[in-house]
Image (cartoon, rainbow, N blue to C red):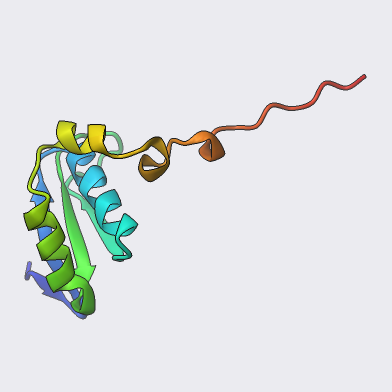
Length: 99
C-alpha cells in the first residue's frame, strides 16, 4: 500500500483508536478534512488507526501534529467537550411530559 491515494496522503498512524480520534478532532477543529482508516475489520477492535489528509492540507496538518506532539491523555484534557463531540448538543434532549 502506498502513502498516497489520489489526492489523499497518509499523515500518521496511532496505536489506539482513541489517540487517532483525538488527533483527528484536533485537525478538524483547525479546518482540515481528515479521513480515518481503522486497522481492523472487526468493529470495536482497538487495533489502531491511520489518518489521511488531502494534498492541500498536508503541510498544515503535519505542522499541527508536530507542534502538538503530546500524548492522548494531555490532548484529551486540553480539549473541551464540544471539541470532542460530547457537548450538551450531542446528547439526547428530554422528551416533554404529556399532560
